[in-house]
Amino acid sequence: MPGVTGRLPSATALGKALQREIAALDIVASCEAADLWAASRDCSPAALLWTKARVAPHAPDVVAWPESAEQVAALMRLAGQRRIPLVPVGGGTGMSGGAVPVHGGIVLDTKRLTRPLRIDASRGAVDVGAGTNGKRLDELLARERLTLGHAPPSLRTATVGGWLATRSAGLLSTRYGAVADMVLALTAVDGSGEILRTLEGPSAGPDLAKLLLGSEGTLAVFTEARLRVWRRPRERWMRAVRFGSLREALAAVREVLRSGLRPHIARLHDPLDTLFAGTDPLRVPQPLQWLAEGAQAEALRLALRAPLLLNRLVDALPASSLVVFGFEGETEDDTAEEGEAALSICRKERGEDLGAAPAEWWLASIHRAPWRQAPLFAAGAYVETLDLATTWQRAEPLYQAVRKATDGLALVRAHFAHAAPEGCAIEISLVGLAGAPAAEIADGSRDDAEADLEKALESREAAWSAALSAAAEEGATISHHSGVGAARQAFLHRELGEGMRQLRALKHAFDPHGILNPGKLLP
Image 1 (cartoon, rainbow, N blue to C red):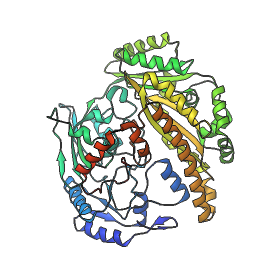
Image 2 (spheres, rainbow, N blue to C red):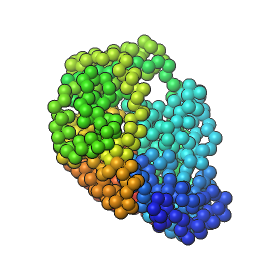
Image 3 (tube, helix red, strand yellow):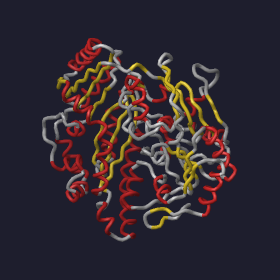
Image 4 (cartoon, one colour):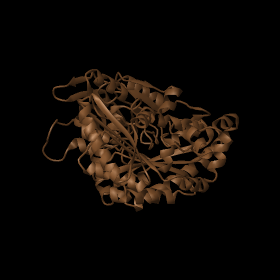
C-alpha cells in the first residue's frame, strides 16, 4: 500500500509497474500523488475526517481510466492474473466507504465510460455509459422533454454506475421508483474479465440485472445501461402541510399513498428538521442555529459536548412536523385534482395547509443540504447519515429507538422519504463532536492531528454503532439507498442471516480471484 508522506500519498514500486502494464493496454493510468489522494476517499464521514486531518490512510497504488467495456475487461484480467485488488469508483460521492481502496491496488475510475448517449423517445429508453454524470444526463433528457425521474442529492456529482452499484433512490422515488426500477438492460464486466449483457424485457430464470444491482462493485463493474425514461411533466403542484405531531404526519402520508395517489414528492420532517426546513414561524434556538450553519466554531463544540442536553432542548420544542407534497402532470387541472385529494386526507389527520410558497422555497433549497456539512466538519463536528427503511407500523418506533440509543452521543434529526404503500425510508442525521477545528489541526503537529483524528473516529463510531444496533433490533433494513460499503458490513449478517453464506458463494462465482472491491459488503 502506498505510503503517506505528510499530506499526499507517494507512488510505490508496485504502482509504477502497474502503470506501465496498464499503459501497454492503451488505458490511461496515473501514480501522481494528487490522483492517488483523490482516489483514496469518498464522501463518507470517516473520509471527510481524514481530509480534515490531512491524511490518506487508504490510497491505491495506481488509478486507471478505461473508456470501454473491452478495456475494463482487459484491466480486470490483468488484476486477476496479478491478484491485485480492483476498486471501481464513480463520482466519489458515496457515504458508506464503498469506493475506498482499503487494500490498495487499482482504482478503476469509470468517468470515461461515457459512450455516446442514445435517446429513443418512442421506446421510452436511453442508452448511457456508466461514467455519465447524473446532472448532465438530466440536462440532455430535458432537451427532449424527457426525464429519468431520478433526483438524488448526489445528482450533480454522481455517475450512473454509482447509482446502479448502490441501488440509489432520489427525491422523486415515490412516483418513479429507485434506479433499480428504471433499469431495462445492463452491460457489466465480472471479476474474471467476462463481459455480461442482460436482455431487455422478461427473461427466463433469475434476473441477472437485479442480481448485480446494489452489489457495490464486489461482483462486477457496470459499463453501460439502458434506462426507462418518461415524458417530462409540464405542470407542478406543491404544498407544505404542518401537523401537530409526528404520528399524525406519518398517518397522513401513509393514507395518501394507500389511497392510490402517487406524489412525485412526499417528504416528512421530524420536529427538529421542521425548524431547519425554514417554514416554521418559530425562531430556531441559538445552539441549534450553530448546528444548522456551522458557525461560531467554539460555541458549536461547546454545545456538542452535551448532546443529551441538546436532545432535551429539542424535546422541549413544539412537536409540529412538516410534510411537503408535490404532484406532477400534463395539465394544471390534473395536478390540482390529485393535490386537493391529498390535502383532504391531510385535513382528516388535522394537517394545516401552509400553501405553495413554503413548499417551493423548500424545493429550491433541498439540494444545498449536503454541502452544508462542510462548515460543520471544519468547525470540529461530524455529520453521520443513516438511510434506514421499515414498514409504516414500525416507522415511529424505529425513529424513537435510534434517538434513545444515541441520546448521549449525538444530536439527532430525521426526515421520512421514499414513501410507498408498505412503508418508507428514514434518513437520520447524527451530529456530534469531532475534535478541533480544521484551522487548529493545520497549525498543529502531525502527532496532534493523528490523535485528534483517532478521537473523532471513535466518537463517530460510537454513535454510528449504537444507531445501527437499534435499527437492527427494530427489524429495519440498515441501508435503503446508500449501500453497505465498509461502514455497515458488520451489521449485514443480522439482516441476511443464512443468506450471507449464499452471498459469499455468489461472490466466488462472479469474482473467482477475490479482487473486486475487497473488504466491502462481505465482512
